[in-house]
Length: 219
Image (tube, rainbow, N blue to C red; front, side, top):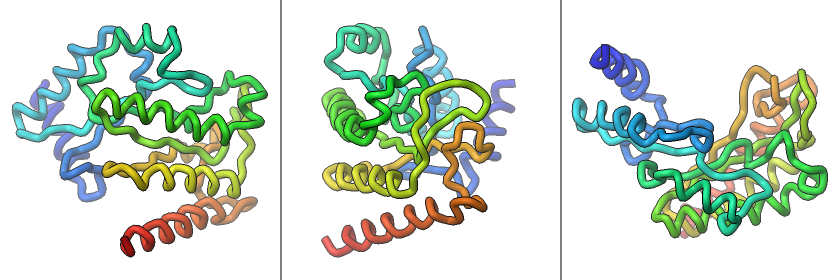
């Protein structure tokens, strides 16, 4: 059973030419890792399956960081993280641009301000723990079927957030941006084309990333 499981994952996913890799290492994103308890042994078993059988080290990105508002210096955060074994992971991250459906209005209204400060503080936490930091961003957020805090969709604000991240990316060797979006439109985080917005979000990505790439090549 275990061998079939390993073979299936490797042949169906890891060996696919479009599968995301970092330095030839298959990337595995551990969604909501922050909610797991006593997960150390399970993660070790999973990674060892591939390291022993295929001599293939995985690149683990863990959703282990707190959302806005939070701080690595907070007492609750420090206590909770002291119970986690982040040595298992290659990179630390959050989810949904660190936005929360339970976020108070003052944070929603000034989201970009808190967003940039949040990125800086948790990136420094990752650096101090000798881990990479994976940036996360969204174009907006709102549930279509239940109540919750809403971050209005805006191509202009999305562009600002991408530029904030690109500026912070410039001083680190690991450069990755994860757009937390779903193509079911259930949380309004999509960047796919729509009748109302056209290709606006894809155009933002193309234009800002092309400009960033050209500047990097000139260095």
